[in-house]
Length: 272
Ligand SMILES: Nc1ncnc2c1ncn2[C@@H]1O[C@H](COP(=O)(O)OP(=O)(O)O)[C@@H](O)[C@H]1O
Ligand SMILES: [Mg+2]
Image (tube, rainbow, N blue to C red; front, side, top):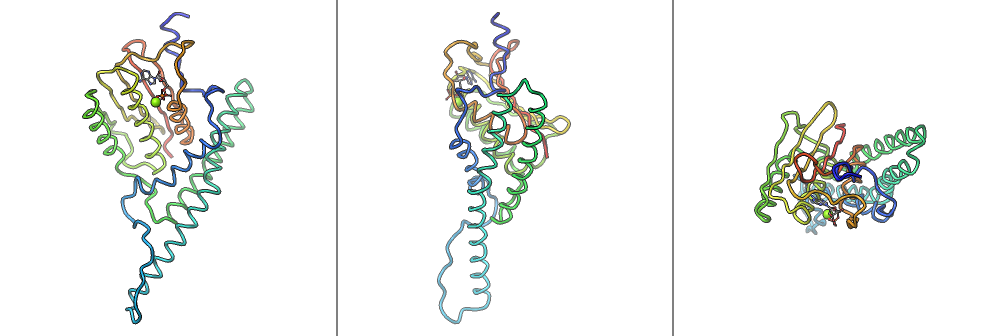
């Protein structure tokens, strides 16, 4: 195959069998939802235990004790729901994606599984909403752009690779916490690959928006992906990025840029 043609092949749009992850790993991505709170929390308390109080304490102090006890019960319930339900639903969405790839030639089956994935994501979204309420944490994130800007600035500082962020005027002012978290992790992994593998001098991160999707691209000017068929080491980074996009109902493509050179990671995710 001529070099140009194979370099254009998206490599991240399908998870080859040998690179598939087991359920344990699926769940480790799901488990991260549990840490959204500590990563992204902008208010709420840190789950301190109920302090002992002496006798004759004022009513307000008793109220406070009751409030904290109630909070603790809700947080415990959220933890249980997360571990026993959310993780399994997350693994199911990823399993269904793999199933679709295995039966790609059967259009009606793929369409049916698409529907099942949509319903599972919907249940997962509703459950997440409930978990945020139980944990008394915000379910939306207003500072995604700010966080990506800080990430890029420290990336440039530590690697010397010129880093630019462009944000479309249509980029949503706020994202669901799950979307913000997973997109941020995709940017982190893509940047880590730029640092480790690209030999690039610069990287452009673009946050774009079209119709009802957001499009995130990370484009470096490095050596590009090595050609298909060579001994490129399969890594979990690409698989993880793709899983995150799939969890959000979107897709991720990694390709070499034949005209400008370098590698482009593109995540396209519907805004709900
Ligand atoms: N920006 C990039 N430029 C060049 N090669 C890349 C880039 N990103 C990924 N690759 C190639 O794809 C491989 C797989 O990446 P990944 O799945 O993240 O695993 P890892 O980073 O652990 O090697 C890398 O080892 C590298 O060969
Ligand atoms: Mg990597």
